[in-house]
Length: 75
Image (spheres, rainbow, N blue to C red):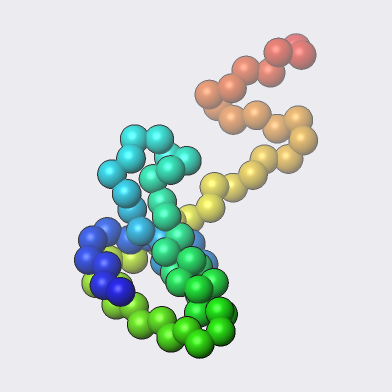
């Protein structure tokens, strides 16, 4: 298997699809290939000819904390 294109790194390499919706934009090809390799009598060879941009997880807020662009409606 050969993939040439853009990739991101979030624990595993995900390929970037030309999709507007962020839910479907990234495909975890490395994880899917790892799952296939666990089948009996299988050998998987893959070449990822892509960049691997690191995507940082967004920080979560605690209960009751708001950001600058949110309004606390309880005041």
